[in-house]
Length: 252
Image: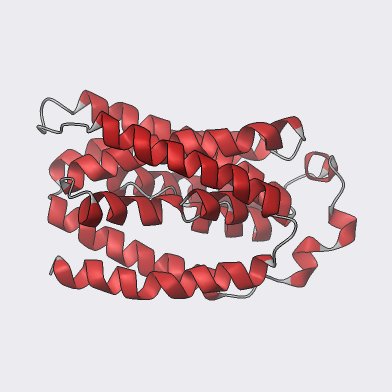
């Protein structure tokens, strides 16, 4: 999970929820809430060094991240009206969607050398259409994050690449920061709902998984420039298909 976040800026919670439900045998709603906290901490850890390298685009954090964070809180609020089985079915469908996004090839033009300047994204001006599209995308991703515990990096990275026209490195770094924002927002609401929904958090498990994942994200950040992004992304996307089908059929 940590490696996928560090290398691709996505994929963390797609693995975390099944890990907590099917290996640690956590209740589904608790697993979704715990996933948000784990992924939030890990994503924030991975984004710190990238932030100081000026790879986190603060304007995209504001335009995409803030709506996403508010929507994640709203998605967590909605979760109290949705059964755990329905949440897992939605999660399985989202996982299949994530696989489809990751199997799509990355356009080479996005990573062209002329786009690699540290200040390029900040100097670029967005059209009104781009602003609105980013805001809508942020709200959609955030709502999903709060409802089923997915960080949404598989949607955030393509959105930043193809709507904001940023570079792959900036998309990954900014995605990690946004994932942290919306994950903490969603977990905050789940914590508030803890008593009403009878959710109990397994703190020793959270600490163990978080520590292992932080190690993975730090290793991934070191390897991100040394491994082929496109092939890694497609391999990860292919691996999600059988897992998503398993979750789908076990909840039908």
